[in-house]
Structures are given as C-alpha cells and as structure tokens.
Length: 550
Ligand code: FSO
Ligand code: SF4
Image (cartoon, rainbow, N blue to C red; front, side, top):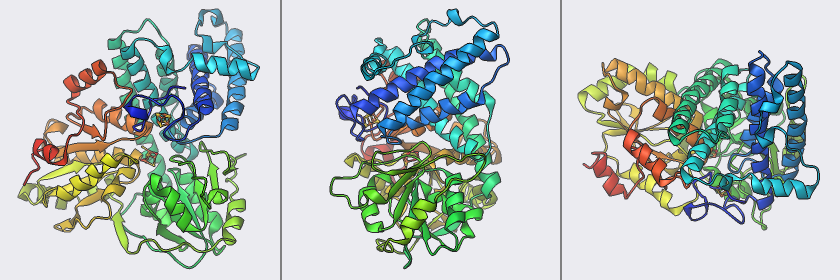
C-alpha cells in the first residue's frame, strides 16, 4: 500500500504498511483498485455523453465509491470487494451501450476501462500496480492526486445533496471528466494545474448545491444555544455529516423514550429549525471525531456513523457492539444499516431497540455553546457587523475553519484563538472548531467572538458572508476585506474547500498543522507564488505576520 491523502500520513510522507488511521494494506489496495475502475468507467461515460447518454446509476456509483475511499470513512474489506464486483458489472454494461450507440470502444486504451480480475491473487496484484506511486513524475503525481482528493471531497458533498433529492448532472460529468484527465499521460503540469483550479470551481458549485438542499429541506440555521449536558433516558449518538439520516432517525426515535444527541460534525444539526422542534433531541455530546474512543465509552448508548471520521476501537473498548454505520461508512465489527429502497426511509429499528436496553449517558460536560451563524443568520446581522467594522470595534475576522486531528501540534489552534486580540472575531466551520469553541472568548457589541457556520461544507457560508461584506463595504477585491485565513486540514473534504477558496481568488491562506504530503515542492511553489499559500509557524510569529499582535 501507499497512501498520503490525509494530514496524518506517516512521517508526513505516506503510510506504507498500515494507515495511521487504522486502514489495513488490503483495504488500501482495494480502494486504489476501486478508484482505478472508477477512472475506467469514467472513460466510457465521458464517451457516452457524446451520444447524449447519461447513466444516473453510474453517476451515483462513482460518487459513492469516491466517498467510501475518503480517510476513515470505510474500513470494511467486504464492502470494497462487493463494490469492485458492481464496478465490473456497471462498466461492462456501459461499454455495451457505447458499442450499441456506435462509439469507438476500441479507442479507449485506459486499462481500467476493460481490465477484469477473478481470483483474489489477480485482484491483489492489480491493486498493487495501480496505486499512487504508479505515476513516476512527482509533480504530475502530486497534481493528479490533488485533483482526485478534491473530487473525493466533492463526492461527499454531492452525495449528501443527492440524499436530499438535489443533483446536478454537470457536477457528475465534471467529476468523470476530471478522473479521466488524471489518466492522461499527455497532460503537462500546467494543464493539470488548470484541472486543479477547475476542480475548485465545481467545489463551489457542489457546496452551493448542498447549501440549497440543506436549507430548503430544513430551514436556515439560526442562532442556537446547544446543550452540552445529558438527560436520564437511554440515548443514540449520531455522528458524521448526513442530515437526511439525522431527519429520519429523529422521526423514528420520537416517542420511543430514546433521546438523540449529536457528536463531532453533526453538532450543526442543532442549528436547523426543522430539527430543533423535537423534544427528544437533547444537544451535543463530547468533542471532535478523534475523542470518540473516550466519548463513546462514556455515552453508554448506541452510536450511529453516517459518514467519517471513524477511529478503530481499541481492543479494550466496551462500545464496539453498540456502534452502527450507514451510507458510505463502514467498519468490520460494527453493524451496517442498509440504503433507502424504493423511496422509503432507512430502517433504524434495530439500533433504536438496541438503545432502549442501554444505560443513559454519563454526564461529561454541562452548560451550552452558541452556534448557527451560517450565511442567512450572519447576513441578518449585517448592519450590526458592518457598524462594528466601521467603528473599529471589530478589527478583523479570522477564518479558522477546517478539521481537527490528533497531532499534538494542533494545540496551536487553541493557543491562537486564546491569543487573538479582543477586537477580532473567529469565523469557523468544520470540526476544527472543537479546538476553541468552548473557550470563553466573549462578545463584541452582542456579536459572539466565535461565529460557527456549521459543518465543513458550510465553509460555503463563510464565502457568502465574505462576498456580502465586500459588497457592503464597497470593495473590489475579496482580499481587501479585513479577513485573514488560518485553516486546519485533515482529510479530503478540506481539500475541496481549499480548492474552492483558491478558485474564488482568496489569497494568503495559512494551512496547517502541516502542508499536505501529496504536494511536491514544485506544486507548493506554484501555490505559494500564485496564491500566497503558506504553512503555519508559531502562534506568536503568525500573529505578527497577520498583523494581529496587540
Ligand atoms: Fe471533520 Fe472528519 Fe467535516 Fe472531515 S469530522 S474531519 S474535513 O470528516 O469532513 O470536518
Ligand atoms: Fe495514512 Fe491518511 Fe492514508 Fe490513512 S488516509 S493510510 S492515515 S495517509
């Protein structure tokens, strides 16, 4: 195996024996092979579109498959084996349609468009051959992987939108064209860089689509005080990012005597009007994803993963049999809830019945946190915000969104938030916020100093807020705004958010805690020279650099 797609890649170079995330070499290789087949299928579908043929089933298959290969979403070998068999079937059917349409099937030379393996030995051998290191030139490899990781993030957001009934064929078509581009040996580094930026453009489009899906389905997030304490009933803790799962679980648990709590990236579900109305929706329990090994022990009840981030339980864990996965997520040893069929909701009966037999959660915190500052809410407060900016009461906004992770160096973000001057406001989205969202940072003229827009995909809200402020302040360039960017990344959804920001022309983003292992020195130079991208140093030095020292 070789994998360097996330911030925890071993030695910031790549995982080679077993993932730091816990991914086995077997699963890593199967993921590489699935990706290879998705590229092959895309060769066929890109040609099919020339004949006006769209295969919705394949669009979703590629989207789901990319999502399943995101860091710590799915560790279940059997699910990948099944997926590979489905890939062969779909690809062969698509080939047949292309032939029937009169397409040039022989003209498709990419191996993934025709290779089939039957024995386990053939599959493992092929998986080994098609990995990341198969591209020898390190700059071309870096750019190809940057596109692919952006596409994985895009796939995650496209799938959440799809689950709510929102789809754009244009996005699927781009994803497939871009997958094909990563197999084209004739493309130069400059041409691949253009594909990287185009990926960012579709990143904005998919986040806009998901924003529309979420807010049309559940209303606009609003200022909310989220309870951190517990009640005395058995509970279900829902994690991940999928709001459709959240809705169906809320409905199915109503009146059962089982309470519902959010964990990690599901915290923003508390901000939606459609969810707040349920009296058995208690609040948020615990912290960001990697605290799950402790939070799940304490919770006592049942846990549902709707997406990543899964941490393999320790051998001593007592909660393993209480964990369920659904959607793209999976883990051998956890029970899996199947997909919706014939337009009917998922069936969560098994986990609700299981939860009824569990003890109530142990209190680990008390009090409340405030969130719900997505674009609609912040724009409703625009007059107040602009007045504070004009009077100088607010000097600067600092975008500190992104992901949390295990690395000790991430204490930087807590310290950074603590040391920010009193006349600054943090804008955040994603699980990075858990590094500082419980700090008593106070308010400025009634505006909290931490404005949480929601999940990582709600970074779109931060962009909308920035564009609204730009207009209100009569500025020509988004970079003239009093906004600094100090973003933390972990997995591939953060990659698409970063590419989306670059596409929108945002410059001078600080990215930490380390720069991605998959960026070669030359690709880093391109990003530094064209976008002013940089890593982080020490809190004091970065404060100085961002002109934030008091
Ligand atoms: Fe976090 Fe995990 Fe949301 Fe990621 S829970 S790290 S970028 O999945 O997607 O922010
Ligand atoms: Fe390593 Fe990250 Fe890949 Fe897991 S996802 S194998 S930790 S680089």
